[in-house]
Amino acid sequence: MGALIFDRVRSDADLDAVAALEARCFSNPWTREMLAAELRGSSVAHVFLLRQPDGAIAAFCSCWIVLDELHVNTIAVDEPHRRAGVGRSLMEEVLAEAARLGATRATLEVRESNVAARRLYERLGFSVAAVRPNYYTAPVEDALILWLGNLPIPPGSPS
Ligand SMILES: CC(C)(COP(=O)(O)OP(=O)(O)OC[C@H]1O[C@@H](n2cnc3c(N)ncnc32)[C@H](O)[C@@H]1OP(=O)(O)O)[C@@H](O)C(=O)NCCC(=O)NCCS
Image 1 (cartoon, rainbow, N blue to C red):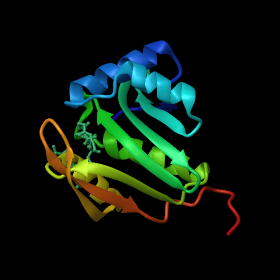
Image 2 (image 1 turned 90 degrees about the vertical axis):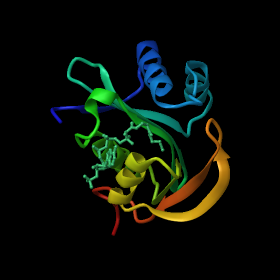
Image 3 (image 1 turned 135 degrees about the vertical axis):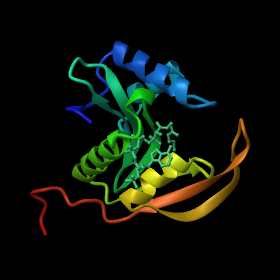
Image 4 (image 1 turned 180 degrees about the horizontal axis):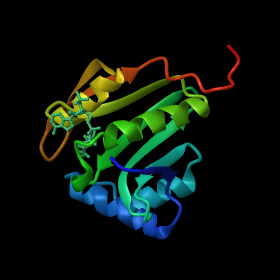
C-alpha cells in the first residue's frame, strides 16, 4: 500500500478533494457545502484522511464521535487505491482515534448490495444488528445497520 499518512481535513483544497471523491463514489453525494457546514458547525463531526506522501488524498472517512459512540457516515477509497488494504487501514485508524476520544462502540449503515463495503466491515468485526427497509434512494434499497462493540482500548487508559 505504500506509506499513506493518517490525517484530517485541514484546508479548502482538502475539502474540494473530499467532495470530488465523494461525488465519484455515490449517487447521492454529500456536497462540499454540506461537508463544510458539518465541520464548521459541529464539534462531533470529523473527516479523516489517508494521504499520499505528496499530500494527495487516497481515502477519506466522515464520521461523528458522540460520547461513547462512533457513527461512520461515509468511507471512500479513490479507485486506483482500492483492493490494497487502504479501506481497512483507514477504518483501523479511525476506530483507534475514536477510541482515544472516548468511543467504545461503532455503528454505520451500508447498502445491502455493497459487497466490498460489507466485506470490509465484516473483516473488522462489525455484525448486522438490523435492516432498515428502503432506506436508500437512487436506487431504492435496504440498509443494513451494523455495530461493532469493544473498540480497541487506547494505550495509557486505566484498566
Ligand atoms: C468499500 C471500499 C471503501 C473498500 O475499500 P478498499 O480499500 O478497496 O478495501 P480493502 O482493500 O481494505 O479490503 C477490505 C476487505 O474487503 C474486500 N473487498 C474490497 N473490495 C472488494 C470487492 N470489490 N469485492 C469483494 N470484496 C472486496 C477485500 O478483499 C478485503 O477482504 P479480505 O481481507 O477478506 O481480503 C471501496 O471499495 C470504496 O471506496 N467503495 C466506494 C464507496 C463505498 O461504497 N463506500 C462504503 C459506503 S458504506
